[in-house]
Image (spheres, rainbow, N blue to C red):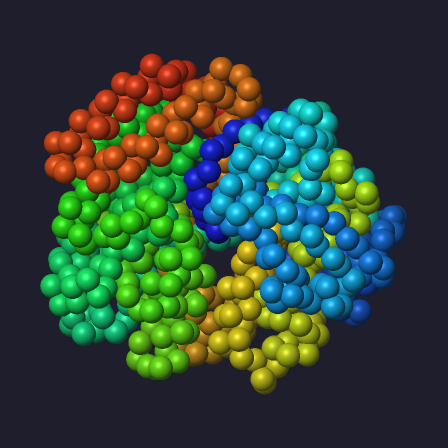
Length: 572
């Protein structure tokens, strides 16, 4: 998951400002509570969210209050994705998991579609007070803060014990980090984790690579030489380097990480928007590594070695290119889902085709073990909130609890029980069947990607590995294999940078954050398409001056202070 949130985009960040004195002694042992080693001890108290009737009870102490049994009666609510680049399915039957919920759990979800203008629609809905029952989106969106300030969000605290999957998988100290200034929890996290969930990296077209002699791809110089070869042999038929949606940094952000040891991909996003210099955050526009990486990008652009529409294309266009095999190297913050789908499409007609992943590319002379394509946050990426428009918010919370439960996760990733899996083992993980279909599972996971709104990485990653570890590498699920071999090891823990670093949306620093974020998005494009190295330097130097006039230094100083406070809390 990673800038994804990068599954993981660089949308404008702001204020979910919260801190409790009891928060975190450390995150190195991740998001499990004291009871923990296996999901069987994390089974929910209701039958619907329990992986197995034989699973041991989570506690012999005072019984948890009983909640509504999800699926026992109809549940209807409206839902909205607060991202311009994505919508929920227009019809429930268009998506495997939602179709299952409609047919088996009596759920009717009415999507409210942004159709590429989610931000504008969200503003309109907030102004009118006519809000969706459920809103899913960027954890750092100013809209979350504004809805909270307006009293339009439902506190979730009363539901945590009744529907305990979140509480049982994610340590309370991390849940507390999501609390608002009033001390209450209003946000349900997506893809919370106790281990690396990085999905950023470099994907290579296997057939093209072998036709060009399988050259070494370890340094930026190697990459450049390879892209030149691709263009010379295939011309316009193949895009040498596909960086996904670079308006969100994506592939050019990956290149940046390869020009400096310890560089953070998230430095190019509004949630950090700076570079680490000792114990301070300093201007990203003045970072020599950023200057160098953008010179490399602009060189690729001038020589037509990189997608020429990288700042305007939507993700559907990227997927089309991958499925058609028209990409030699693909890079981004969340590449495994689309590359997996492209891989399985290509090998249908040619078993020797497809895609594979490589380790992070680095500038010659750097220590590759100190270069990370992306980072991971114990609290994941996105959040879901329930608004006061909901007639029965508790039942919607039960829906989210089911999503994050072992059963919900298993169905989202492997399909309904009885097909690719049947029942759960003694540890609470799915028992995979002899009829397990690798291609079908890849298709299910890709299609369900748009509705994974309460993802539980702590559970699902070991569940996936249970099956994949038992198979030869060439027979493993594409995503599972390359995440385990490449993307997870090349992701670092950035939890310290992801909480409490966003000032109030409507204050002076909030205004500065938005203004400098807008400037950074503009400068990414201008410098990447510059006509010379000298022009890149000029653009970035002018941007640094402009940012400082907007109050950037005050924002960097404030964020440095909050970052150092986080480090103390985390014991670093």
